[in-house]
Length: 150
Image (cartoon, rainbow, N blue to C red; front, side):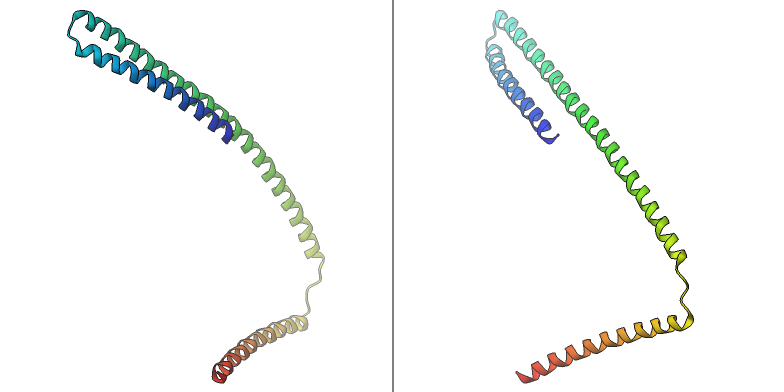
């Protein structure tokens, strides 16, 4: 998609460069014609300005056509991308619902913990937190000992 966009932009730039060169050339002709004051020169200047206006109209039309082609291609690709994402999300949601249902069934099949086991679990958590605090203190003391040893 990006490569197609870049190719279209390059083609448009090349076309615009050619048109600019021609417009510049015609502008120089128009200036030369305006410099002369003869009626014949005025008639030629009108013809040149008409050519410039016609070229500007053609450039504008080409820009609109390129823009429409690029935008239409982007819109189609975005629509396809949206459809792909929607399918993937739907599949993921369905899978999650199925996994949740399985987990719920397994959870309901488990027996409740007796009160003594809940107390043991709480005591174990308490011991883990105390152990973590002790490790922190030990690390702090070892840093202080290193600092004193130096």
